[in-house]
Amino acid sequence: MTVLPDEGFPLAAEFPDPTREQWQRLVEGVLRKAGAADASGPAAEAALATELQDGLATGPLYTADDAPGVPGYPGFAPFVRGGRPEGTAVTGWDVRQRHAHPDPRQANEAVLADLENGVTSLWLTAGPAGIPVDGIAAALDGVYLDLAPVVLDAGADFESAARELLRLYDERGIAPRAALGNLGADPLGTLARTGGDTGLDGPLAAAAALAALCADGRPGLRALTVDALPYHEAGGSAAEELGCSLATGVAYLRTLTDAGLTVDQACAQLEFRYAATADQFLTIAKLRAARRLWARVAEVSGAAAASAAQRQHAVTSTVMMTRRDPWVNMLRTTVACLGAGVGGADAVTVLPFDEAAGLPDAFARRIARNTSSVLLEESHLARVIDPAGGSWYVEALTDELAHAAWAWFQELERAGGQAAALRSGLVAERLAATWARRSADLATRREPVTGVSEFPNLGEQPLQREPAPEVSGGGLPRVRRDEAYEALRARSDAHLARAGARPRVFLAALGPAAAHTGRATFAANLFQAGGIEPVHDPATVDAASVAEAYARSGAAVACLCSSDKLYAEQAEAVAAALKSAGAQRVFLAGKPGGEQREAYLRSGVDAFVFAGCDAVAVLSSVLDSMGVA
Image 1 (spheres, rainbow, N blue to C red):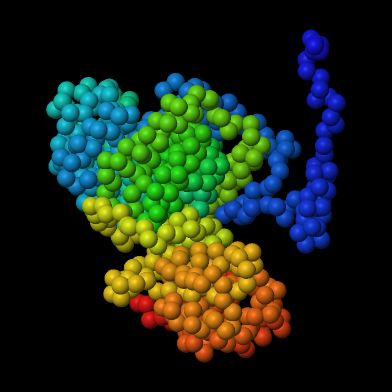
Image 2: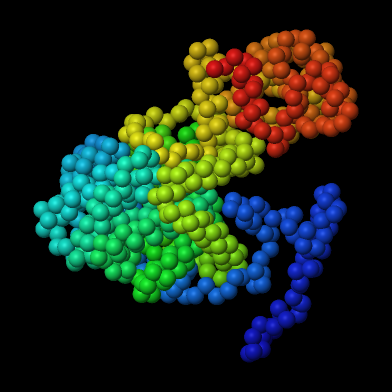
């Protein structure tokens, strides 16, 4: 048996440290085989980068040279690594469930079930969008208000909802110092959601009065929420979400200090709410960057170091939630919850997987709360303080995102602040431009949506849920990643209801399975994303048999599927036969070029479908040609 020397394990010393240049040369060899002969050195590395929003990019390799510097320690400025030295290692993050059922009795049943099964705080949507203000007491019947924090979200009705909760504390004998939660005042967030030209002086004064009440002997109660969700839900990027939250937070600091609170007291009255998405690394970086940025704002405002730690509430994104194949939302919210927890959020809300279908049922709420429970109790995710700390990638992404967000924040301040930027349309225009760019990626499936733009299930039965209360519009829009495909699927559903069958496409597969399976699978997946049912029977056709097969399919359009070699031999004759058989449009799965493309077009092929094509435009045109309204 070999005995290792006392000075340590020496085997690593036998291997020389590779250089970045050596790694790049290996990449060059792979790229040359893929046809990218000109990519060499840094260009080879850049060829593998992934573009993000805000002008950022994720590289394929990170080393210590990419780290932006020392990020500090958990619980100390600039709080990149967490607002508290112990992080969430003692008790885990606050598992916060959202409730918005307009019937206070049903809301109460759900509230008590959640608190009995792992939820540690309550987020109540009150007013027209949820629980009636006068029903808050009934919704909280049986809740130990000195143990379970209550966070209100009442929009323009925030003052009446807050007064009702404060009255309830007094009625139930809760000492001021034992009250826990947030009264949810957010006049600028309400302006973002509802628009309008109503004045802010009254709401801001009411928010400041509530903050003074909380600052006077209620250390466990905050008055204001800086809700960045309206900007995320309007299609904004991570940096735009952060910049808007900073501008809003600064506006509230000015309001509160003008009302007589100290800077430290004002900082203590704010809780920031951010979206957590299925891009776990971007979520981690966003929360870390948010703390760093707010620490800088607090520092220049004169706050003590201990007051500069940002209190964060992370909510799984509604933009990523889909109405079709909603079960996949469980996976999305799990990854988002992981990102929020690793990113250091103090409280995390996992929205139920059926959120897009209406009011969630008991099963969906159970899955939502158990998502946090599994990560906390079984995966022990919170037992490590800042688990992402020291990752060269995460540290670099945090730094780059912080700089992009700070630039947007400065632009908002130059425009007169968040209120002025909302009223002038600056925020709306910026977010709309960002969403337009992302919509293009969604349309071309560069950003795939599982169950919607990729691997859709036309036989799936939609979830039936009680409709959620209507949310007043007029402000920033609310977008979803699935909206373009959802509109196509709705057209298909309407056609199914009228005609008893979905619109169909005939897949004219040429040659053996080895030649056509890849492109036939691609075409079937593409057309189903628009609610168009593919018919692949028989398995293979030729010019002599395709007309009869097409007539039996009941389809209005057809798509040729095979290899480039077989296309060259058969595609022109098969396309001509399909047109003679009455096919309204003939597609070819592939991207031929030059003279071959022109020959196919002359023979009857109308268009080509391929990876990267505008799927939404193609599918919309197909439904139009079929007369599917």
